[in-house]
Image 1 (cartoon, rainbow, N blue to C red):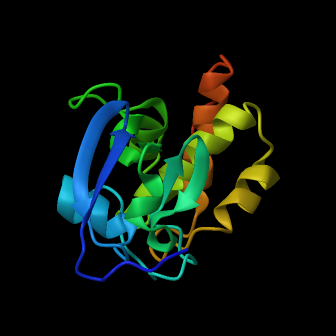
Image 2 (cartoon, rainbow, N blue to C red):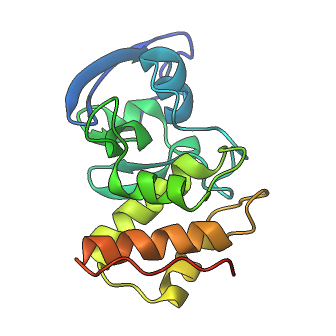
Length: 173
């Protein structure tokens, strides 16, 4: 693979949340920076920049990826889905987002986008997860505010709703 000069920009064309999108990227520009600064999709957050915290989680061609570990040029021609793509319309929340709101599953909101992306992907693959399976998924995300209990509650509520199960009575526990 030949190395290109660092000052050379490349056109990156992708489908972002189902819509064609393009921008220019330097060869070493990270996907997080490309999404936020070139495209204006600011829902994907930059946390640790080492792939550890999960705040930058997105889907690339249907697979979860850490945007802080992905170069923008790597998604040329790909379908990228970010947290902005979870809502059915700009003025409406998606099912999982609404469950987060009802269960107070966010506080500062920094980790929320990545957690929502992982949970949305997971619930499409495992429509009736156990509580332990959701807990295991959440180990890939760092949240400093909620203590994970409201996040777990929201995820289980959304899973039940997706499965067509009746809503459970909320407890104060």
